[in-house]
Image (cartoon, rainbow, N blue to C red; front, side, top):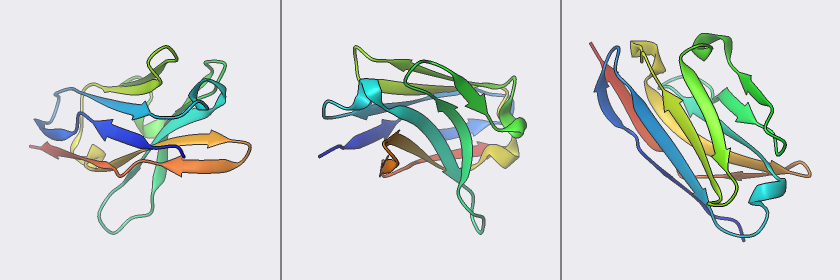
Length: 115
């Protein structure tokens, strides 16, 4: 059974930074693609950033140049460094692992950006 535990969310002013972490249990992390998704109130969940098992990264256009996704396979952890946060970055951020088309999700962590 895979469990994902996110941390690092919180309240930050616009222009500030946060770093999200997602620690995975189990033995599949190294061979899984990982990603961060977010859901704003009244909106659908959307992809923010993904990193393949080989380290290739993909970003939503709205966060390119501001967010960086990394992974540490020795710690079974994926990170999302978020800089220059904007009001529209507010939402619940979810960690995802994907392996052989099976998705695993964390419980989510709230990120609130204030003006």
